[in-house]
Image 1 (cartoon, rainbow, N blue to C red):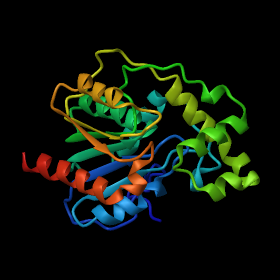
Image 2: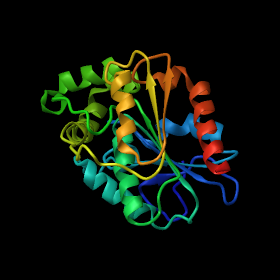
Image 3: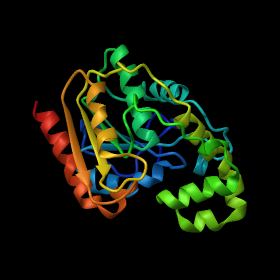
Image 4: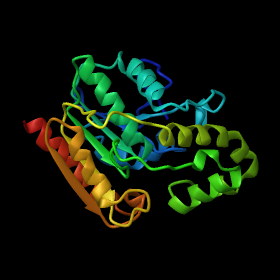
Length: 252
């Protein structure tokens, strides 16, 4: 594991990339960590500089308090990106990471550095609200929800000592995404592509299509077989879809 050259706690680069390659910034799900994107980074690193975000409160940042606000996460991440070279930047966020990516893209717009493309995965559009309250439930219910959705190492979920260390940060993630609200007309200037599993219990196809209302540019929808963490069983197809988006955008 390595950090980006600026020494930021927020960014991980697992594989070297070609000089002047575009940047693909990957943002994890609630309870997720940067290493979740290690397999994808390996497959994509020959053509793109894959950087994965490490939120506070997990892995090597375990001693830091978590952040339970999407807005603050986006603000802090925007600051962490400032030392990056002025290369084209693509954003890929899964689940909670999709919403963080959307808010980060809004901040990049405001700073005059519009992202080339926002790829949102396994997450309903920002304007689609549900009364989710997982963050208010006890630890047992929180762990049960993580098991139901998948995407978390089952060995980790069985390690009671480790669980007690990381549950505060995970609960903070759920609080951040479940209390997030934005204006119905909030939008970004870059194109959006939404990825979704056709059996995702958290995001319906219509809720994924609703991302169309949050860009002033173009929108596309990619549907994969599988549930909330479809990208684990559909990694080659996911990599192909990401590569198509990047290739098309750079050709423009």
